[in-house]
Image 1 (spheres, one colour):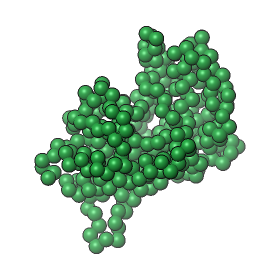
Image 2 (cartoon, helix red, strand yellow):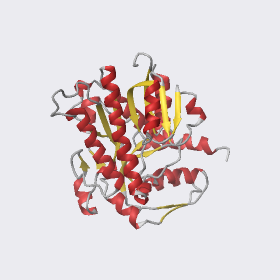
Image 3 (cartoon, helix red, strand yellow):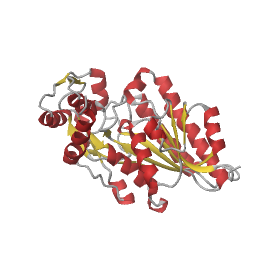
Image 4 (cartoon, helix red, strand yellow):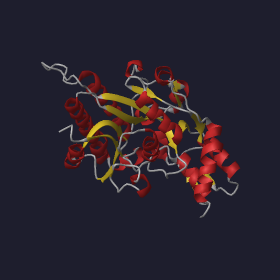
Length: 343
């Protein structure tokens, strides 16, 4: 059967912010065909870059079986998720999508690896939401947080991501360890924890860190914006091109150099006030106010003000190309201005 099927890269959540950038880059840099999956039909421009696209849920097992009947999946970028804010309104659904969906894909990767007699790479973007600091005093004292510190998330999304990191470790290192014949081709699970991501090309989709991109898109489209966190709120951020670079760099790293399954990555930390000041300086007409939402504020306050990504730097030469100046002046402002120029 495997000889009849084409080798392919599977991307779930393909219509999302990371999915856009990943499909663009992989279609230019990889010879492997891309199979895209999302709840909604893939956007036409993205569809052109894919060998096939499917509209449906990752928990639809019949759909997943259809995909693997046609393609031998050798690499998976599992981006599909119900994000932090939306997940709090429907925690059971979030668990189903974020955990059951990931577990089903890990099983798929395991089966594909066994049939093809090679490990399938499984790239999993986790999140700063896996951290949970109890109060602002602790957050200030914690400084730059390592991968294993303060992992006590207070959101369903954070809990889901943290558990899926552990599932990935299990499928990579310990799958059926007591069996008489343990699996020879375990899943090559590789995970990075993104900070808040800021994209110039796609609109925010329900993340609790989305106040930063929301602020910029509102200013560029001349709409007033009331930021849902305090001015002094600080978390780490990353420009979308660096987010794509990070996941592709981890995917291409020599497995012999990887000492961890889960890596922090970051670029810069900034307060909501810092971001407002930069946006207001560039868009003098911007109307940005602060109207903290107590519940969402509590979530953001539980995330570290910075993360330590030294393991990623040493194991696979991670280095963000965009510091705060390059992110705003070289990426966000020019691209967003062009996007809204005709409006």
